Image (cartoon, rainbow, N blue to C red):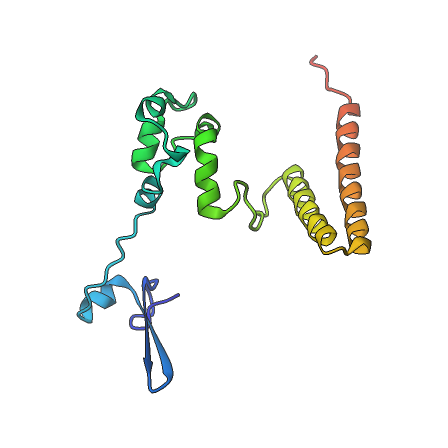
Length: 179
């Protein structure tokens, strides 16, 4: 959302006032709020939020935390707990047991459930589709909508069959010999 005053910067301060049963919203960037005499500032620090979310591993002892080291970047779990930032993709594997409860608290599920980027591989897109279909299947079964559940089951089988055929066809491709 753009600042109502300057119309250029992104608004970080959102004020709502109700006057005579009418709601008035004002959206300001930090610069305009300072110029208008407001002392609102956005001091929200995501790293600090993550670091303070309650001893990540559910009360992990400091001695245990120090022993956990990422094989990819040599970051310790203690360093992660202080900064709230992981050092590399391997940290997710190295600290998996400690990160799962944290991810569940933050986003309710340990896996991504939002939109898929356009550049994502077909393999990942199909896996995501299968997961979504399984969730729909479970909801329909719980709601006793068995005809719809059967249709979803068939969709899952079709996607799985495509994956299986693609694997078989990739195995059948002749390998280029080095000459």
